[in-house]
Length: 282
Image (cartoon, rainbow, N blue to C red):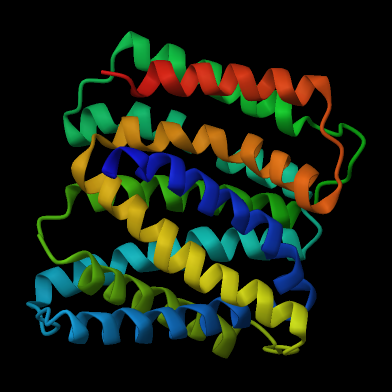
């Protein structure tokens, strides 16, 4: 079953791009994320109680998990949501964030003492090239400066979060660790709302469906799988599967939203798949 985790993660994580725009159309990005991670925190809290996990942990473990949540749920997701709300094309935002495996590979050697091989670098280069083909770049599109800055912040945050998560010294149960990470995320977004944002949420049927998807399938499902993969594999190998996400998202958009899927997209999908296979195989 655990061998299926990367595949399940790619499907669930990719599907989040389908429901991000409906959320932003019905709320400001930080209120949506604060609401989402409030529910996620409560959910992991109740699950931890049900499974009789120790919720009260030492200060060091609490700070580590909380800060990981600030990086991942706060700065990364907040940056992506905010950039799209400012008019950043979703494809370009996704392509910038897809640089994460390259940064992680570059940093995991000196920081985590991982041996990043030539084979992995070849896989990373192929993966990024394929993702770029799938997403494409509309040279004529106007990229908002604030959106670009927010996306770069998101890229740095998810790279830092992956490396930080790998370096964590705690061996907390996933439900407990995820609870404190979600708490870090909701705290970050509440602070942003208090000082910088004008909060609003329109609880339309579309918003409720999209939010339910992101809470249950993405936060409870995909994120838990990601934390498991980071904990049990090298950081450089784990993040290489992220290259498959833009291609899979494009396929889902074609399947469910009737968006075009060209021969160039299919070629990019194939190149990306080969790259990820090379980068992750033993």
